[in-house]
Structure formats: structure tokens, C-alpha cells
Image (tube, rainbow, N blue to C red; front, side, top):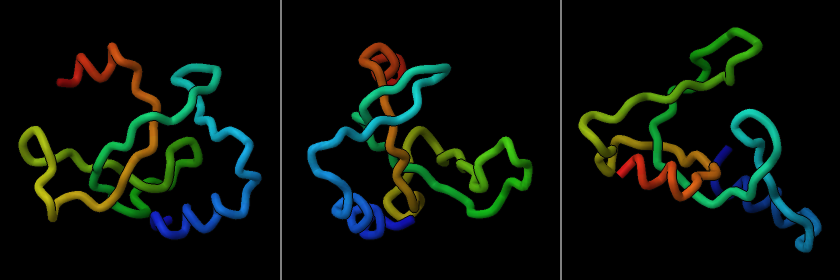
Length: 84
């Protein structure tokens, strides 16, 4: 899904409702973080995996032409601090 497709779908929703994402083990959170990642499409066939797979960056961060996607996620302050 492209950013423009997501925006189009979100614009059709009731703008006063919340958007939440699944918690790590249970519960829900508000998304508060976008991470740049490289995704390879259609890599997994097992039903319990998502279809697409994350590719690790070369070095600590992706170069401008190296990433192709955003992951929308919740990142707690402690988690973000540990990843710096």
C-alpha cells in the first residue's frame, strides 16, 4: 500500500474516531512513530507470517535510496531511548 492509498482510505473514515494498533503481546496503542525500512515483497508463504519481509540496513541507518517503506508503530519512550 502506498502512502497516497492509505490517505485515500483514511479520508473515507469517520474523522472523529481513533486509530489504534495492536500492542506487543496484548492491548492496543496509538501509533506514534514512523520508521523507514526496506521491505521485500512476497517473501513469506506461512500463514502466521506477514507476506513481506524486512531487510536490515547496511550500517546503522538506511541511505536515501536504500529504504522503500514506512512501518507505522508505537514506540515507548524507553524503547526509543534504547535504540539510540
